[in-house]
Image (cartoon, rainbow, N blue to C red):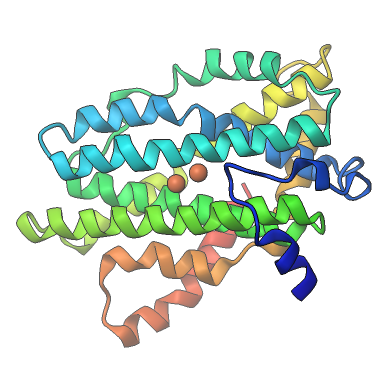
Length: 275
Ligand SMILES: [Fe+2]
Ligand SMILES: [Fe+2]
């Protein structure tokens, strides 16, 4: 473990040691292939979100400046890092063609009407999204023994937690001016958790799958089976308690109550993951 940490300490997401990939640990790992490629699609397409978000928060220079100059830059860097990894680890995969299919469909899913009714509640929804990404990369880091991929996932996880902290801080700023009340905050969490972004992952997985299986049809049993299998593998390593804590934080529950509901929320998170 110590050797692994030392070997990884000299690089960043801008300088990934792709020549050090241990191909034997990834070439037959379909689960890693689909998770890495799907994540690279959604991350690279995040500029669609940034434009929409920047419009939504127009006039709040602090938020817009952070979204455009930090958040977007980091999300796209995540996508490019994962793309570079996918190209080296699975060189036969036509990333560009799969991505253009994904983008054509995905760009229609990202519209302004998906935003919450108030800026404060939208910040809550963004906290839910960053909880999802932070926990997903933690899962990816634990699901692989390949050190370069584990290093990428660990670094992206840290960025996602940092994004969460920013959105949470901005939520507090808006909530201090115009308090939403716990019920509305809870509804925003639930809405984002249940309704929204699951489509992103399925859309990304579908286009990765389609390039590998050109004769596939939407809803084909093999694709559904693949999604079920991936869900099962992700659940094995998913940090449910971490997810529950992050999801509950905007509710500002008293410490005792937060501890009491953490268990049921963790179970609910596990249920959501079963979809
Ligand atoms: Fe990201
Ligand atoms: Fe993020």
